[in-house]
Every structure is written in structure tokens, then in C-alpha cells.
Length: 287
Image (cartoon, rainbow, N blue to C red; front, side, top):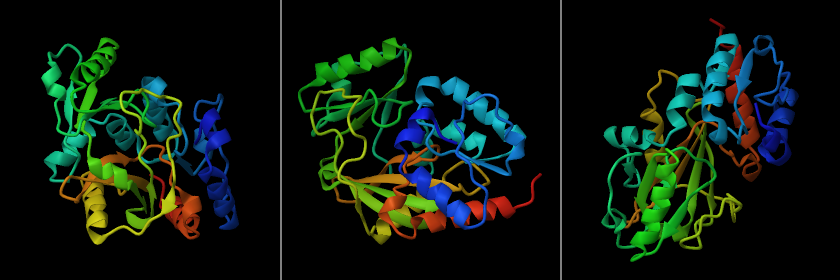
């Protein structure tokens, strides 16, 4: 499944459809909220670039539940619901996964400007977001600006995340992609929040993408994040975004299980691995 935006901009989608068809599978891109759609006619529905779901979260989660009742949905609806709110980072932390230290501020909670005091500055973002929407970083000493950003989000009824800005981000974010739980490939991309104090919802979300060979520690960290997902099922696809902490160790920035860009164009074998994972799920008996 995709969205109107995804159909136009998802560079992975044509690669996936072409590879699936070349493997003998009938594949059809479908906009998730198109009506009417008889989802029961599909053996498998795979969420891909449903990039408008954040603004319509309740509607999207209800759609996922309904679709999962008509066909096999991957990733599964309970995983989609869990991953749609970045409070999941707390679960990863409880499971011992190395995660960027994160404080959540809920609507109605009290906070002070000192809550945004970090040596290298802070990042403020909503707990439900994608593509760095409504996100900005603030340099040390800009406590009041960061607090105003948080207040703006809280006044809209949104939970707020406050994270330290890690200088290791300057070395680039690492994105590790997995198919059916097995490592497929990785990329490194340039830092996104380059201009401090600016909320730019029109920024390009993935800059300077280049193939990357992750370290063993990075792969282990990513696998630990996958193992902490509260589901009996291995995700069909996953992307684990990592950055380096102040000790140079990888920590999880985000675990993407709904509609991540998989950067399949960055690895010649990437589409094939994805198709193998999909074909494996199609071959499983329907219950």
C-alpha cells in the first residue's frame, strides 16, 4: 500500500513491483484509503509509502485493523499501532536496547526551561511524527526557544520528546534495513537538523544517501531493537536508524516498522531480498 504522495515520490515502489512481478507474483500498488478496495482478494497486503498517516493516525490505525481482518497485513496491525508512537523507545530501553536518551512530556504536565538544558543542546519533536515534521534542534543556552517549541506542541494535545543533541550525528545517521529479520543492507545519510532553532517541514528528509557497511556492534544493536518488538512475528521489513553517542557507540534513534524508505536503490541485491521475504509470507498458509 502507498499514498497519493507515495505513488509520486516513492523510489522503492517501482523497484518492488517490478521485482515481485519478475518473480512470478502478481503485484499491484494500491492507495491505502482508496474506495472501494476489496482487500480480501489479495493474499498479502504490504504497507509501503503511506506517508500521510501521521496527520490521520486514528483513521489509519482503524484501516489497519480492518484490513488485517480481510487479508494478511504486513507489518501486522498491532505492530503498526505500537510503532506509530515513539513512546516505543521506552520499551526498547526497558529491554536493554541502547537508545538515544529520551524524555517524554505529556499534555498537562509541568516543565521548566531547565528541562531543556543539555551540554550540546537538545532536539524537540512530537511523539507521533514522520520525516522530522515539527522537529528542531536547539543550541546550548536556547532553553526558552526549546520550551516554546514544546509548549506549542503540548497546546495541540501532542506528547513531546526531548533528546540530547549528539555531536556524533555529524558523522551521519546509519540506517540498517532488514527483510524477515535478516540484515539486508545499510546506508549512511547526512545530518538532517543542520540549522538550529528552525522547524522546517519542507526539508528533504534524506540527504547525501550513500551505501554503508555497518560495524558488528551496529548490527548487534539493530538486532537487539528488533528482538524487543512486542510481537510473536518477525517483521517483514524493518529499518533501524542509529547514531553515535558521545562514547562513539551506536544508539537507536528510531525503529521504523510502518512505511520506511528502504533505500533499495542503494544495493543491487536489496529488491531481491525484499521479494524473497514477501514470497515467503505469501507461501505461508492463511488462517
